[in-house]
Length: 303
Image (tube, rainbow, N blue to C red; front, side):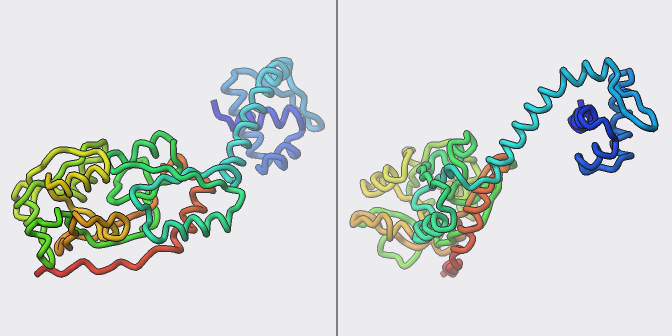
């Protein structure tokens, strides 16, 4: 059933005038007539008696109006309420963040958003590297600050907020700790700690590759579920792992050394949200965040 036909039918029942109905619905009179004729053909009988001076409902039209008008009002009210909610800045915006979010820009983004939109309450929710997208898809959060890549048909990737070099986390006494830099090929010379989770395979491959550029398999160790578990395993000598440069600032440890990976592309952090969950609050947060996009540091040149 075409909702436009129901809307036009209900309006004409109330106005009993094609011109006023057209004005009310912002249509032409001809379009109103066409819509009513199509609706009558669908029903299979006339719903209005038309003369040069008046429009009246037929008995069938009156009966159909009594049955459809309340349902149409309910649908219209629900759509209006949903539209108001989608466009409103009142209420809560649940922002998920992976790790340190957008690093030093995180506090600035949140502070600017609160200043611009004081009626919107920010709720911060941590997600873990083992499963960064499930809570977003489940609607538990509205927008997510996460590491790329994200290539999902139901998710929108917004502004890139951070781009930073990759580092290799190794035990402080590991032979690599004395080097100025390492290559991805060097990962095959040790065991890389695995992370068990539900993130897409391409996401894991971008952060912890299974093969070196020349095709050598990178050995995998025991799987961990959180980043702190990962650091603890590394410090205990159970393996090594690629991380990012900001780990040196946010998670400094005397028992772990960070060595630049000279031939691995920068890791990027961006906003991501559900295409079906884009509201005025989400758009406003993305607009504020885009003002804090940091310049990308260069990837280290190969030795």
